[in-house]
Image 1 (cartoon, helix red, strand yellow):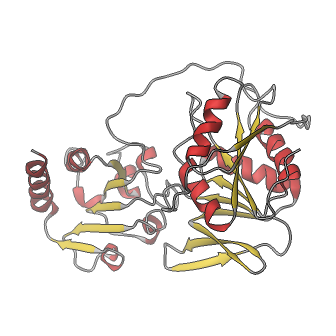
Image 2: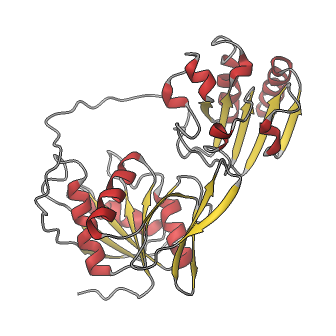
Length: 328
């Protein structure tokens, strides 16, 4: 049986429908490598398990545990938590890292409740001090950075996708199949589903490297097209403030903020966004923030790296034309 390093960090890797590691995998393994030895856990059906494990090694996993619970394709969450419990008992990690996705938060909460481990959600990074692993958070709309750590046991930490820039070096991982006994805990089941293919030239908002967001200052759904045009030129995802969503200009899944999606892109362009604290809570950790607003006192300028005070209906078309010309 494999003996795992004392500084092991267990990382739950989500997979895409095609069986490849999800986009969040690189950041999770990069964060794990900063504080210990990354041990990846892949919970999926048997098809493509070897290829997925090898891909995890390319992203920096030193060890890969593959789990194929019989009920993983029909029961929600519980088989994944069973696999996490089995992996944690085998590895005895210093921490468990999970993506702050919908499925990730579900698994993390259930696992923490079952094991009585401390739970730290929506972290933007991890560190290590003499007593163990520390989770870094951005709170109150990014006004404060705080750290948290458990008083006992390994912390279960969900990491905001896109928040961690570091990447681990590729390795040839040691791969081991994990035996997962069923807990028998009641779980919702999937009776049937229908696959739907969604075609889009834009990246998914959560985890996007570039984001262009529009707010109330755009005044109408027709004018919101400026956001779409700039996003297409930049190759960015499209987001919105709550005001734009409540006005019906864009769907709810575009909303960025405390009650929407949290993003941490390399570039965040805010067009006509005032920068209310609820919105800032979902984008404050962006690496570079560019704000375009006619109100020089708009709160968004307090956190912007670059600000343009002016009429967005004049500024944005010029920006689109300039960027388009550079691409030609």
